[in-house]
Length: 412
Image (cartoon, rainbow, N blue to C red; front, side, top):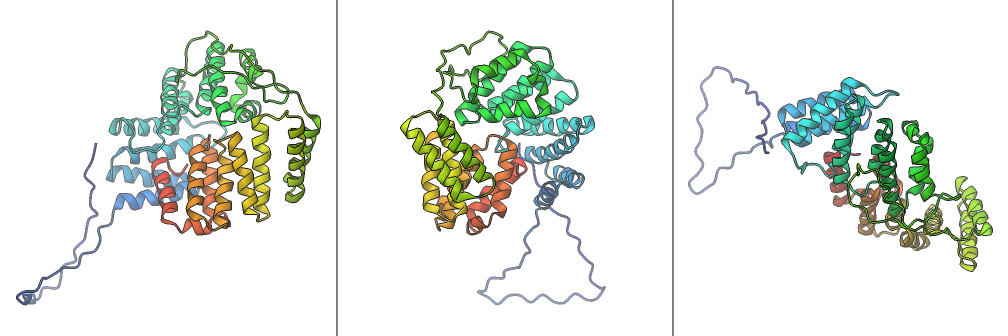
């Protein structure tokens, strides 16, 4: 639905009460052109100011700006930004704030009413995910589950959404459905090479502690991870929905992990130690030794190989060896095509090498493939500040990429 934008009021100052000067007619054959000042888009100005407040963490000010924006331009995008600011304020403390959660629901529901297909948003799942968490805060679990389903339908490759749904199912006393949703999350994560992320999230994030105490969830994790956290299982095709069925549909044949190669793993550990302390040349040497040992007796999984190549590429970048960096990072992407970190490092290498358009393409890939909102935000902030990308930031395409993302999803 489109709405007429309200023009800013223009205040005319009355002239002194004197005789008005005669207006001279333009000479015959000439065209008189009146100079006009460009009209200021008040909603756009307020939106940009609110975005700056949001990025700076000034949530009260952002909410005020977005409230004014929604009054001037009451469309789906305006109410989404208002809801997003309330959502950020609702969940910034140790415990979610129910008042802000309710305001999030009100603003997001209005956005949906104005734009049912959410065509004004680049990533509609963010709205549904925010709705789900806000409904959870208000103990409206059935509505929360429905919102998670809508979020997953909007972003069916995002493994975090079914993980949140699994947590809610477990909290609702539905362990079998929770395990089913967790299995879906792990299968999605495997395709992105992010199984470890899911396992570490469950292990370390207090928000998901309820899954740590679930025997069914632990059994599902055990199906996916062996001793080295990387058990490769043959998973069936997904039906594309968050299932309610409790039947186990993940009992496909499993392949045993390859035999371990202790020497290769030790070399990787040595490389990781050097990498951690920013000793990049020794790290490269250690990783190269790990690859040599694995070539003689293959044992490393695709994920392990991808991590080795990614860190080698990052190390080469740190040493200013761009060609070597790109070669290693491309080998990483052969093992894990959706590795956002590798795409970002390729963007750095291309920029330093003067291939700015290629750098911009790699940046776009990194943002599109980031599996979580936090990672996406991190890449965006780095792209705005990393000195290697200074020439790319001058390109029109960079501004359009950042600007469109910021307008549509509040820069997250």
